[in-house]
Image 1 (cartoon, rainbow, N blue to C red):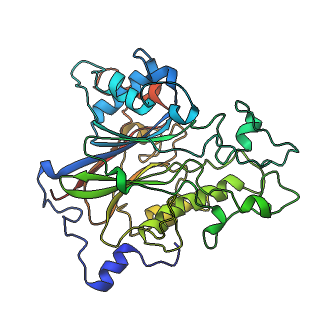
Image 2: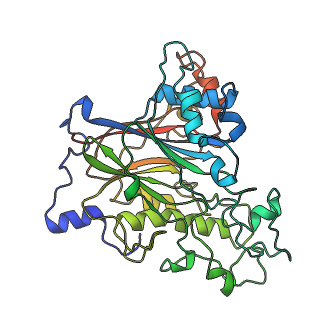
Image 3: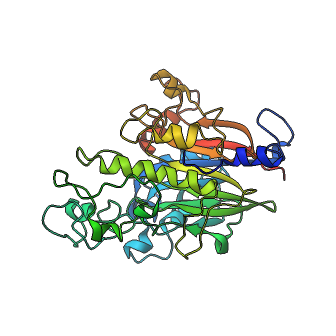
Length: 391
């Protein structure tokens, strides 16, 4: 961990209470106090798929969401059609809600109408203006691998693999903080790869002056839950690999995971896209949500998941979600087809964790067709956690 005092350490030092709204294992709340937060990477959901009903993958993903019924849902890899410049009357996230999530996708299920939708801009497919892959040419014509390699975050066009938040509770849009433009080299003790003649990916001095840490964006989207603000922290760090021996992407993923750990610890070095300095207030409640592309013990990311998420007292990670499907494959906590744990929903310690799950049924699941829907929806599995908000 960075040197900042953890939130739990701060509260212990100042005499504050971690259980103001019910510590884990204490049934201080009623069922109506529980709010379900979830994260789901739906694997490159496009405009053509969601703007009209009838797409098999979108319908399967909606079925999975309707089975879990989260109140606040972070979506990864939904194309930001506005950023791409596609002429539609609504964002893809809104279309997914209206065309699929509100329509029951299986007998016995009911639709969910997420009234509130927030779609931040993404660094994916946003061209850097530089030859970042050092292949001798700067490719600024969207649509090719070479273009994506020269973008701030890999994407064939602006807004590919983007993020969205859909919620049953009001989103406090005026208080949203985005860290999309935060420069990698402005993080103290960063892992950025600098000049290296033997590597394909590195940052020279000129590139380091502009290169952004976040491969998509890191965004704090506050949600008003019955008068209490809960900060939804959304990110989707770059996957390790797809580079060379310099491990550019693994190093970047490490620091992307670290960013939110520093943010909830109140790190002063951070600045958002509006120029506001600093991290979260000490008494803030929050839930980290998303595909972090970092699994426990992973060498390529220098075990960022363990350091910054699972062994960090600023996140409630003592009881991690499991699934029968993952258990059958040897890892009950797996969230990805390769049986890695890379998708997370981690509340702040002041929120009472009431339960959590990975939606990955065993092959003999009694819910007819759910296993097929899970496989069709994505190579990732939806993860949810119930928290006690003390409403």
